[in-house]
Image (cartoon, rainbow, N blue to C red; front, side, top):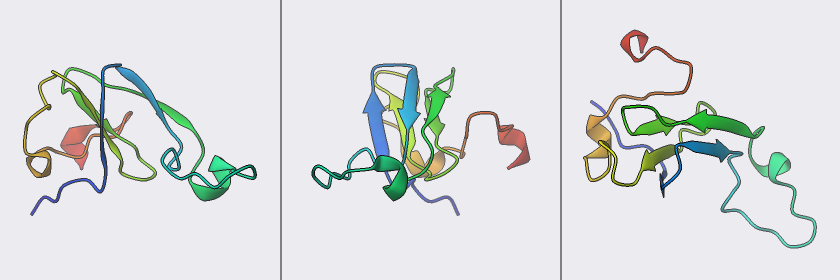
Length: 86
């Protein structure tokens, strides 16, 4: 049984970054790496989405093939991973 990713971020860019703490804010002493994970850069390919390998956040290209699709029906595609081996 496939489940939807915990968080979906729609974007108009094919190159995105994730640090696991983009939406967490804590004032002057805010330190994203202490709250999330190392910042990584991801590339959305012809599938129209990519998943962060650290936090499972899914980035979906607006207007792309995965936009408007049931996200639970899509395979987990982390950048650098071969979707056939998951």
